[in-house]
Length: 327
Image 1 (cartoon, rainbow, N blue to C red):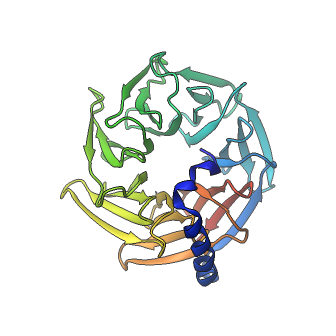
Image 2: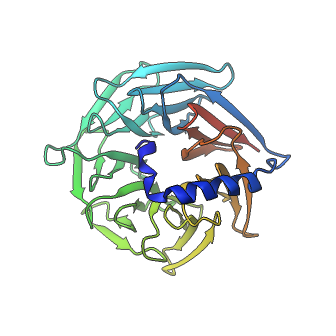
């Protein structure tokens, strides 16, 4: 997706957001360090994935490339993904490779961390415009993915076989996560639900959001299997407990719109991005309080978060930078 995905927020809300951002532009907590790493102009970095060796992969959606940053030196390596590429998501698999959802190629792509070999896994022909979005691995090493065109599916890395299914309610599958017990869940933005996937049949069982038109965008599991969901149209952080089948929500801003990304760190602190205050926020479920890290450039538009112990990374698609918060 590009910046064109924002018009539903409305011009009036954006003017209001500028005022809110000014009010919330407080210094980040002293214990945290925020650092920025520029990437080539026009990259429009979308997703990031810290690698075990200390480097960071990112998708350069504007250029059809996969980038690899060395934070120690600031050096960036560029890996072209092929003609027509428009990569969206990237994660690091159990094989150590970077796995990319590429809407332009209509394929999931594996990039070898040593040889840089680019291997696409095209979708079946009956899914020609999947608009691939996010990937995750289950406990058996199978790769699962979503596509906003109304599809979700899996790739078996051992055989290369891709299976795909039409999503309930059509368009919208977006964020995706694996719980510690191995359950696979995804969030549908246009469909406005979260769903649990049966790993054998592929059937998706939907769960309605806490309010209509909440805009369930991304989803992440904590260490107990509790699901945290970014509610884009509600401007809120949602918590869903699959055991009790109950929701609870917290607003991230006063505009009631623009909560994009969500990620849960190793301490079960919940991170989200708030487009309306131009910030990354950290939520402590124990105290139900937020800390806010406002970007030092306007319209940062951080679309995804991912981390490793002590670090949370994001991609500022609006400024052609990667950002890290170290704690």
